[in-house]
Amino acid sequence: MKFGAHVSIAGGIFKAPERASSYGCECFQIFTRSPRGGNPPKLDKETVDKFLNKSAEYNLSDYYVHTPYYINFASENKDIRKSSTRIVAEELQRADIINAKYIMTHLGSSKGIERKVAISRVADAAKEILDKTNTKTRLLLENSAGQGETIGEKFEELAEILDQVNNPELGICIDTAHTFAAGYDIRNKKALNQVLKEFDGIVGIEKIWLIHGNDSKIGLGEKKDRHEHIGLGEIGTEGFESVVNNNHLKSLDMIVETPPENVASDIEILKKMRK
Image (tube, rainbow, N blue to C red; front, side, top):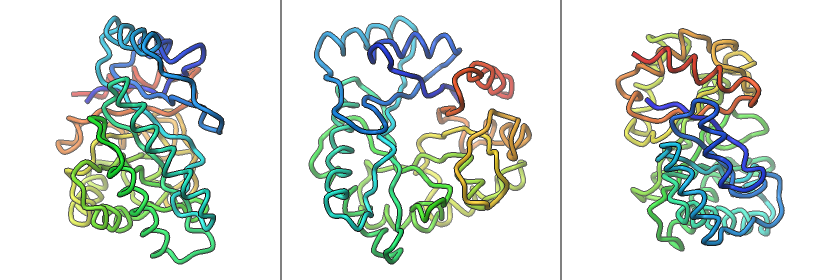
């Protein structure tokens, strides 16, 4: 398992590899645009070349793109659904330009609508995105903590979306904090193995392609998305040691999404867990 962090692109996307290296990252994750809104910065040839050269200079060949936070494929507002689908398709193409391995996206909320309808809307959006793009970069759906009726907290929902889309280019990014907040206990080896067995039976463990490694500020099943530094939250050191060394997961990359002032410490802690 390689470890990395979400890093800033302030000053230009080509600044990210150096920042990642300064944290001790072996891989990294970025936004290619503001996560809050607005037009994306251009990825012209000069910018892309500088990014690729810097990534090579710091020996960072695997990197990932996170879509903006405001994506909601299930919104009752048709314009929001359309813009969410368009932006994620754009991000998939932008990620492909910089040779990113995957992009991952949140799915949105079912607030005010039937859950079944919301899940179908997410699947329809994912289908449309994959149908209109042709990229080496693959699309991942991220599981949710369940806050605000967000979609993807239950493994059954992820399975239903994958089944409806029926495309081998679509995978899953599992966030440890979200998983724990949604009610799946991963605090030790036995508990983790049980959760992975459940995931495998419902979704298929081979569909997990990336891990977001975040400890949780809140307790099991509390359905809130609150990240904590590794080992300082409710999942704890034993839980992360179990994830890092699990036979089904240890070939994957793990991206930490904790505050930048201590992210280097998080990366170092994870490296020491690796057996």
